[in-house]
Image (tube, rainbow, N blue to C red; front, side):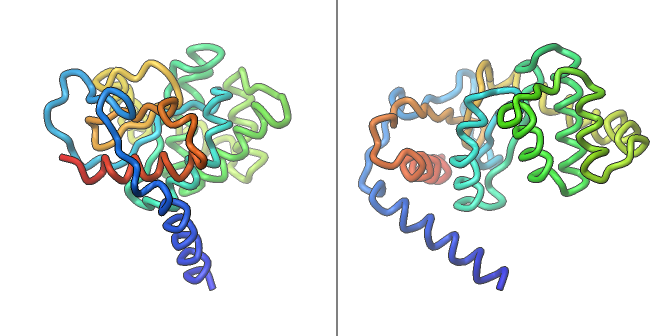
Length: 208
């Protein structure tokens, strides 16, 4: 049954993208080549986002559709600098990395966004973030050890280096294969923004 549902979702995404297949995408209009990057890599489609970013919250349905369309080629990187304070940004980023490692990232992503924008309870303090994990079944000691762990710290530092290297200054930012930055505003007049963005990402994923 689960396989049938997943297959159906992928079929729907293919159908949605079909009208956009005839689109022509241009460098400098629909996407930019990131300065200083000559060679594309195999990082796939990465969304640089923040759980404190209202635009990211509005883009969640699009990000979810991208994940359905591209599966393992799609990933998220949390940007610590987009936050009410440096401490909140650092803690939220570490918390999201921990959630990834515990295989609960999608759930925590949804819950954090709900607190910050749907419920209107901005998670400003590290203790607020910790309490969200506790309410969702992760004990405080596990959370404390987890966000301070070597594995979480290593990925946090890796993300910071990547953000600096790619010159990410705003969220959400979509980067393909470490070389191409998508310009969503170039598609604002599209009849189906989601389908057009997926088609553009697919085009860039095939580009060298």
